[in-house]
Image 1: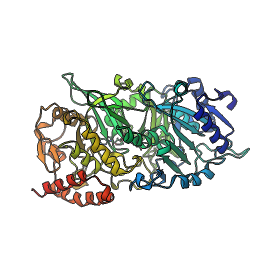
Image 2: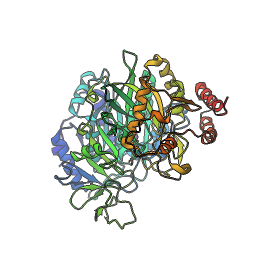
Image 3: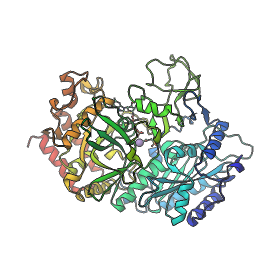
Image 4: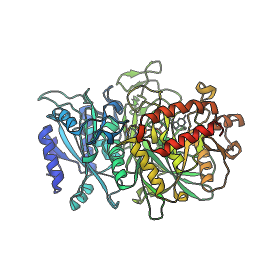
Length: 608
Ligand code: GTP
Ligand code: SPV
Ligand code: MN
C-alpha cells in the first residue's frame, strides 16, 4: 500500500532534506511519503482513511467526494492550556501565553516524539500560506503521521509539488511544522479510527520558526498552517517586518450605487466570522462577496492604505447553527462536495446533519459518538465544535480578488464578541488609538472552539488571545505603531459590534436578529466612511442615532432597535474595574496610550 504512495525520493532543498531525515530517524515511521497534492494521491489517501475507519464516504448524490469523520471524544477542540510559546526569553511570550524555556521544552518533547511514528507513514507536506506569487512567499512544511491531516491540509492550504519546486529554486526558508498523533503501533497492533494521545503539546519556537505538535489530530492543533503558523508564528514575523497577522474575516461589499468597500472583522472563535464573511445582505441592491473567513494578513500598499490577504485555501467552519436560513452560502458551498465533516451526525442515506441545520430533526442518525440517535435522545447529535472543511473556491460568491497576491484595501475593521449585556450593536472608535484600546479590551463569552468552560466572559484582545505569538503588550505597541505609519484618513475606521446582546439585562432573547440583517450595520459603517451620515458622541465612542440605521423591512419595533443600539452608563461603569483588572495583568509593559484611553473613558463616563 505505502509503496504505491511513494511519489518522490526527496528534495533538492538541502535544509528540508536534512530535516526530514533527522525527524524520520527520531520518530521512526515505517515509510516517508512526499505529498504532491495531486488528485490521484489524495484519492489514495482518502481510500486509506476509509479503510482505517477514520472516514465514512458520504453518498455521491448528497455530498460528492466528501467524508464523515468522528474524532476521539477527548480530541474535539484546540487545547489552549497545552499551547506554548517557547521564546528564548520568558518576557517575549508575555503574561497571556504559556511559556517554557525552549531547551527544556525540547528535552521534554524529544522522548515523546522518539519512535512516535512507528508503524505509521510520515507524510511530508510542502505548503505556502498566502500566494505562491507573493513577493516573498511564506513557505511551510508539515511532517505528520496523520493521513487525516494530509487530506485536511489539501483543502485548507496551497500544498504540493508546485510549492516544493519553487522552494527548491531559491532554497527558500520555511516554517518547520512537526506533528505526531503520538500513537505508535507495535507490529500486529490494530489501529483505531482516530489515533491520538491523552498527553498533548502544541508548541511554538518563534525564533526558530518551528512548531512541534503532539498528541492531537484535531483542527487548529494539527493543521499547522492555520493557527500555529498563520497566526502565532506569523504574528512574530509581522511584528519584525511591519505588518499584521490577524484573526479576521475579509468581506467585499458593493452598495446599490456600485461603491466597493472591503472590511475586515475580528471575532473570537465561534463568534461569527465565517457567518459574516458569507453574509447575504437583506437590503435590496447590496452585494457581499467573500475574501476570507478566519485569517487576514495585512500590510501597507504603495498608496498608504492597509491591504489584506487571506492566506488560507479552505474554510474550517463551525457546523452547528449553519442552515439555509442563517448561512445559505455555506450550505451551497458544502453541497458542491469535496469536503470533510468532523464530529457532525450522519444520516442513514449518507448525508450529514447537525443541530440547527433543519427545524425538524431527522428520525434517525448516527451521532458524533458513532451511536444510533433519535430526536428523543438527550445528547447532542453533533458536537458543538463540529466542523466542515471545504475548499474556498467552491464558495459561490467568492470575490475574484481572493486570488490577488496584493490583497484588498481595507476601509473598516470590526471587533466583536459575545456579550449578553453592556456592548451596543455598533460603536465607532474616535481614531486608531481609541480603536486599539477597544480591541485590546475586547471581551467575549467562551465557546466550544477550545476545551474548558463555555459561556464565561473573558478578555480576548483583538480576538487573538489564544493566537498571539509574543508578548501582548508588545503586540499592542505594534498596533499603535502601525497607526502612526499612515495618514489618519487612509487608515481603516475601527468599529466595535455585538450581535449577541440580550434583553432583560442579559436574560432575554437576542435583541438583534443577526446574520443577513447585520448588513444594516455594515451599511451604517460604509455611510460613516463616506461621511454621509452623522453619529452621536458618547463616552464609549460614536453611536448611530436610531433613525440613521436602515431598518426598512426589518421586523423590529423602534423600541427594540433602540434597545440594541443603547449605551447603558451603569453597565459601562461596572465594566471599568474589569478593564483595570485586565490591564493590571500587563503591569508596566502596557503601552501608556492604552492607560490614557482608559482614563479618558472613565472621565467621560463621569461626565467630565
Ligand atoms: P471560528 O471558526 O471558531 O474562528 O468561528 P467563527 O468566528 O467563524 O464563527 P462562526 O461564523 O462559525 O459562528 C459561530 C456560531 O455563531 C454559529 O453557531 C453561528 O450560527 C453563530 N452566529 C454567527 N453569526 C451570528 C449572528 O449574527 N447572530 C447570532 N445570534 N448568532 C450568530
Ligand atoms: C478557531 O478555533 O478559531 C478555529 C478553529 O478557527 S481551529 O482551526 O481549530 O483553530
Ligand atoms: Mn478561528
